[in-house]
Image 1 (cartoon, rainbow over the protein chains, first blue to last red):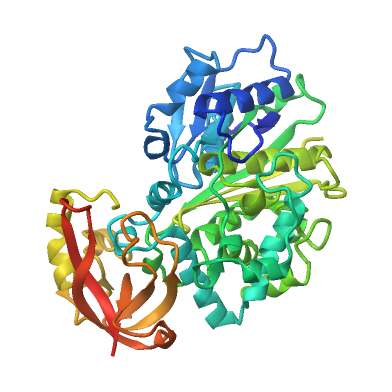
Image 2: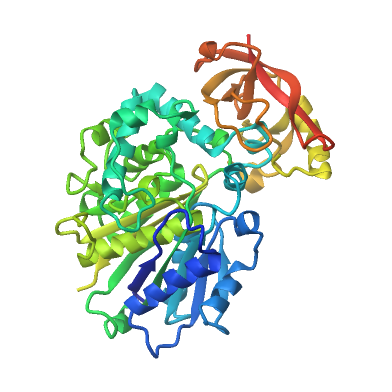
Length: 390
Length: 133
């Protein structure tokens, strides 16, 4: 099958955080308009919309959410499709949009991701997020999402000697990046000691090991690469879009210290692009918890299994170090409006590859970028490899 | 409360009360909870029922100090992934002991307990927890 090359021609996002004054539809419209303006789409017909949202039904009582987005973005009557893969909803929506353009089905596609999480109390948001795991066999027993990642962290500490300080160093590094990101939920640096001393949520994870509950939306505009050059001097080509699945329940996995879905998705992405992990200059990884970033940088091949914690503590994943990980601040500091996250990762990488990352968080000479978006405790992983088109 | 209805709870009772799972006669692997299709063998799989002994060891553990809605009265509590003697792993609370003694590799056995209740007038859900031996 002949596939068309696909490029991102416009990106936009809202600030992530607690938007008491804005609802779901206002957030989405803001991100969408910013992306459409960025793409200079005036007078161009948009063919389809794909929206990633995890739990609008539980969080705002609204299903049929992508029809609402099309409505409030003034895009009717184009087809509007919701994509749901828990915390990977945004990344899978991007992949769905990519497939629509690559296949020739549509020419101009808007991919949005959004979540409005602060309209319910934290306990209810936790229950909604819990749906990303196995409702009948994990949540029912009292396992929260921090608890599931704590189980992975405990096992990683046991198998590889990973320490609390190593976990905490992920949060410190991501807050340092978030402090440079005007769109981040937390724009404040934190100390290692502050993380270690913060309130325990699920041993060994403290509140500062967890990504926050945020509101926010992000959007990108996709086109065939050929057509993209009419709109921008710097189209960002999506070189690979891969996805893999694993058991929904953490306990059903052979190993708790690696995500098989990540390993499969990244292997396919690297094969498709004939690249090695060394070719990646900047990567947004799914750090819903600090341990998740350590496992991600190992599973993606940036570091050997078991060495991710020490590498982070040694500063090898900081901005402009060996590999710049989560320049946006990641889920940890930029925030995690669940459905928006996977799309936000593509927004950040687009800015990095265009050389437009603000406030001193630009990775020098960034040419190849990667996004890594995980659903639940690892049942879905979606990866995109992106490059500035020549 | 995690939104579990009457019929859902009722049909899970055999597995939750008795630790019933599946065994594939083709590859020999045991599964918990019940699966209809063997993920190793798929069409060639020959799945049948099996009952687990309730003995196992702690594979990983955590101590939940920030509980979800419905578990406030239980918190703080220990949660573990337990590896059953017959192979499969499951998630359960660890009760009747000091958390200090909950370690990877520690032997445990199943106990029958109340898991949660849906408010004052709602369902009371029962099932397995584990205790240190």
